Amino acid sequence: MKIPRDLNGADLAKRLAVYGYSVTRQSGSHMRLSRQTADGQQHLTIPAHKPMRVGTLRQILKDVASQSGVSLEEVVQAIGG
Image (cartoon, helix red, strand yellow):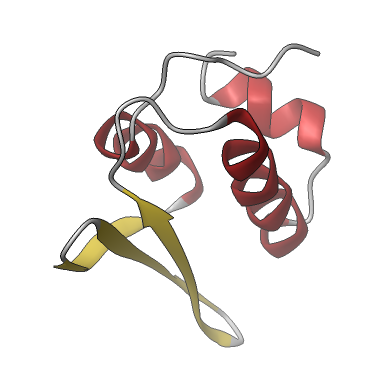
């Protein structure tokens, strides 16, 4: 599993639409993504940096995997990594 190293915040936000996330607001250099689930709403905050640091991206993808109930590898494959 190789995490992509050339993603920026806007690209990541578009690719996370696969899991139902959409940008709900942006404040400065950070975007808030939300998705609706049966239990309510889930939120992520991602930086709009170009390019995003690998450690930051990995933690965001781990959060997506945890919230979606899938593995980190599946998330990386779904976003094209």
